[in-house]
Length: 283
Ligand code: PDD
Image 1: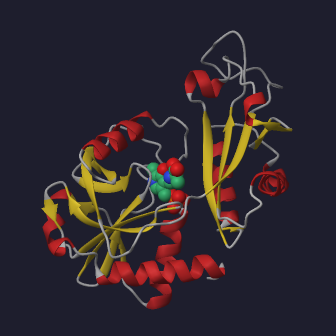
Image 2 (image 1 turned 90 degrees about the vertical axis):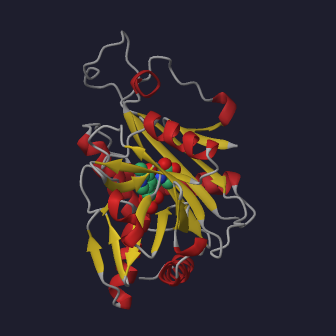
């Protein structure tokens, strides 16, 4: 597998990351995950904008965002010849500097840039099946709008979910469900879609944005207001969204079974609309 690392296209095994890289030592970096539909990256500009935002918020100077188009094309060319759908991972850290110091490295230390592409596994998911999620108290930092590579709370929560036969962990902040460990979270009550508003408590999901655009075009009412833990029983449907997750119905939250365990009708409608838009790159 060929990857991009600091200006070079290398066999994965030939990549040498410094132990003094700030990503390795401090998780001092940001990342993006994108995927293709019909071989074209979906909402590329949105992902690039979010990467630029994350970099800017943590003050990493990286002026080669525009080069990513060429880098990704070359990687896809080298790795993915079979017309398969692809996921791309882009990571930028504050670079490697010795000695280890909390303060930023001196001017001139370049960021470390890593990009990889890999084939997405064949999608075996059916919209007729929902997943269970568990609730976790949000122990993350208060800048979840930044796509930071510091993911330890999310890893622990996701693992906890797996151990309880759940597909995702959803964060609870002050009694409100904000987002999943790596997804955004939605509920439907009496035909109205609810999701947490954009703030420092959630990532501005690209899939979330598409879902809100679909609602707008279909005339579905949206309330960007977080769902409270104590009102879950009043909701008819729940689902999560994400780049690789797409739209997944949630039919159980902890021990609460939603709508007799069947995925919701509006969730199905939004899923269908999403898939149509994704494969046609429209909207
Ligand atoms: N996760 N919220 C969090 C905390 C996320 O990490 C993600 C994405 C999302 C959904 O965003 P989007 O629709 O743009 O993928 C929401 C990526 C895919 C990951 O960590 O692999």
